[in-house]
Image (cartoon, rainbow, N blue to C red):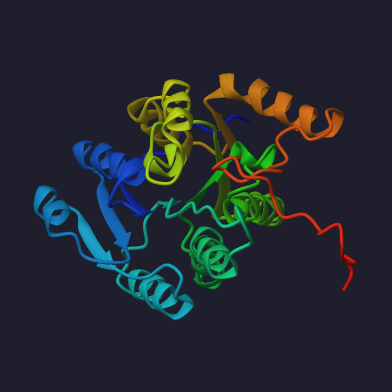
Length: 274
């Protein structure tokens, strides 16, 4: 039997200071939905613009801070119908050399920033109300940028976790869902402050609009569908990159740094194993 879309009365969104998170906050606020915004720091301009929104200052990387927030919301009867776990960052952590601190920062934000909500939510007693938990993942699962290794691996791990939980909690009050995003006109995708201008221009031209993405996610969040691939037209491109990496030697392997210099090579006059 096909279920009707649920009516969303309240939503919690992480990472609303810019990009997709801010777009989602604006959309739900305009629809008179009760919004709980979770950010690492306070943004006075944002809070003044949306007086109806409840702003919580919590670092999603902190398991203790997130658990305290979920526990307080449950105790007060304010646990939302929908959780959109959107907070994420992208860093060039694997360019001239592998930068472990940058990689760890991405993993802790993109992966644990979502997983820290799951642990307390699976311990909250069921009230008979379905809680839709939406993870914002990415099509980089299929062909990730080798220079942004943390982003690539964090999204693959997030997808694997939500695939497992979607099966384990099927037909329960916890509905695990994923949005597999392709190119969307946001700073986290275009990386305008980190990539060459020509690459940013190409990314911008091939990106889906932010407004269209927000509308697609809000529609998806009301259903029990497990995955939304958006924009769908981008999937063949990622499939072609995946195939190219396996069939064409050197294709999209990141063998040179972004400034065009060759990667390090063993010196001809010494043993590379020393």
